[in-house]
Amino acid sequence: MPEPSDASDARAARQPHEPAPLPPQVTMPLLTLITQQSMDEDYLHVAERRGRGQLPSSGSRSRPHRTAAVVVAVFGVLVTTAAVQTAQDADVDRAGRATLVERVNDRRATVSDLQDRIVELREQNELATRNVARLTETAVEAQSRLRRLQVTTGYLAVQGEGVRLTLENPTVGDNLIRDIDLQKAANGLWLAGAEAVAINGQRLTAVSAIRNSGVVVNVNSVPIAAPYVVTAIGDSRSLLARFQETASGSALINVAQALGFAYLQETMTSVKLPAARRRTLLSAEPLTTDEPRAENEEGNR
Image (tube, rainbow, N blue to C red; front, side, top):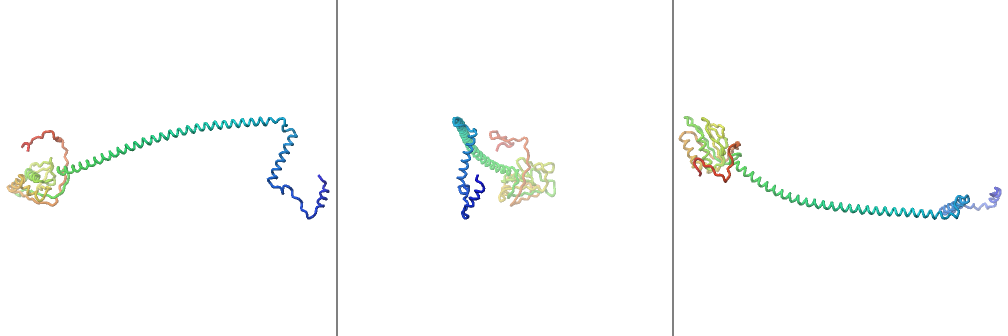
């Protein structure tokens, strides 16, 4: 190292106007500087270690070859392992693909079965719909027939034009109106074409009875009192005329005149008759068409 006096003389010898040169760290590009310094330092570090005997001599150059062989062997093992793993993954992929294909086929078969079931259910539904329509039509027809039978048999309230007969006991004497007189009135109206008949609000049916209990007349087992009003629904223009032409009707008129009880007949534009009380038949049974019909006291007609 130069003496400080020499450095002072050198600085003094310079021209005052000349600037000092810049160090290489400032003028050299940064990348070049880093490369050179790192390479120089590495070479220096290797030389120092070789001088101290820490690095192998040139005679031991076979060690890198063995190391390279080991590295190549390890690399080969890794490549082989990767190949085996890839083959196994391929087998797994093929097995998974086969499983998926099998599942897809199973699902397709299931869908096909469901579609067939849908078609079958649709056919059953159409058949059931036709059966329901047929049964509904039958039920409507049966209901209509039932109403007609109820009207005919007296178990349904009805309304319409008709006639009214009023019978009153005589003011003097013991010639009271009896059940047979009311029977003549009802039978004559039925024969004249009446569709429904009632006596004092008691609707007459096929099982109705008009009977005397002493001096009291009972209709449907219900006692009634005079005046007796016999109401019938039918053609009001011809019902009375045809009633008088029947044997029962003419006999009633003759009895009324002979015994002196009041008798009044009139047409009605609107008549309402109640429904008869339902009765449960205990002994009567339906008669089939192939069974012989029983003869009444007067014989078959």
